[in-house]
Image 1: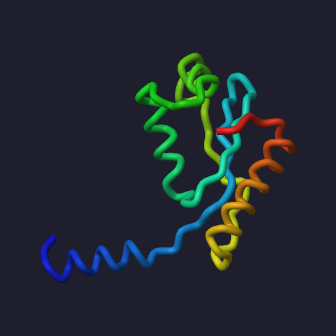
Image 2: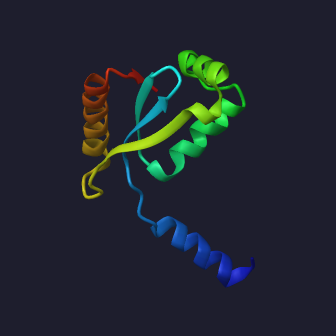
Image 3: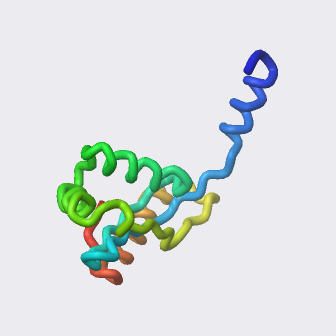
Amino acid sequence: MKGEARKAATAAYKERKVASGVFAVRCAASGEVWVGQWVDLATIQNRLWFALRRDSHPRRDLLEAWRSHGEAQFSFEVLETLDEDESPYIGAAKLKERATHWRETLKAKPI
């Protein structure tokens, strides 16, 4: 990619809409659920699976379940997305509050 094409691709990336929200990772074999929040839901599953495949995820209980049951037993689910119109500060506070709500509702562990 050269010149104008590269500039156009960079501009398109910066202008893309990012959906933030709350997600769940479920282990079908054990029935365990982990809930987390992230500012870009389109990227978080790839990030999590990469860390788990590399044996480098910081949540030891999630990593142990991954090792015990294998990748095929895990699923990723978006539980809730938030409005983009809010300020970053309000959005972060709301994300934290909604993740807490979902953890209590699903009796889940944090990611």
